[in-house]
Image (cartoon, rainbow, N blue to C red):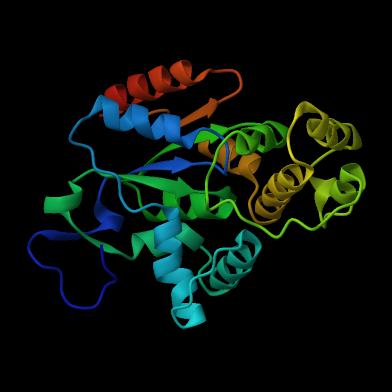
Length: 254
């Protein structure tokens, strides 16, 4: 993929015009399961470079002079700055790119969009795109993050101290978790999870929710025709159920 500039070659097309399938959801909602189901249903389906790569190429590296940024909170600040001048955020960035369809195919998948503004922009601006949204409660997302080993999930986690007090001190945490939920999250330390890991994962979820409202995005997608948007609760459905629902929708919408 590349940014616009030179006229497209015969094999190149703007992603804005292709019938993309776009995964929608924040970290820890089960997008990997949905992605596997989509590609399993169509062996010829290609997966575009993911959100992290597009974010680096379009939003972060140009702003830092090519210096990589790993810390999630620093990345959130840079992407928020990008959205100030590009209200469509990632949707606007992705739609501006040009792809070689010989390599990426005519109907690739992208992982993914987050939040109401991105989804609204994509749905209104790119009528050929369709969406699969995955949702899960924030406390469930923390537990899922604790269960995976992703080197990208890095934030500064702070030092010692009582975990419950450190959780309560996180900026914006009360807008995401109730006191009872914080009690339950603090109790994860007694279940064998390192307090620093629990604190770091909660910080990821709080930072992400400060920038994106997944519930609002899901509510908007439910207003679209069923052939254009699928919204799934990944707590009500186990991974096999998510995969089956995505495969059925992809086959029916094709």
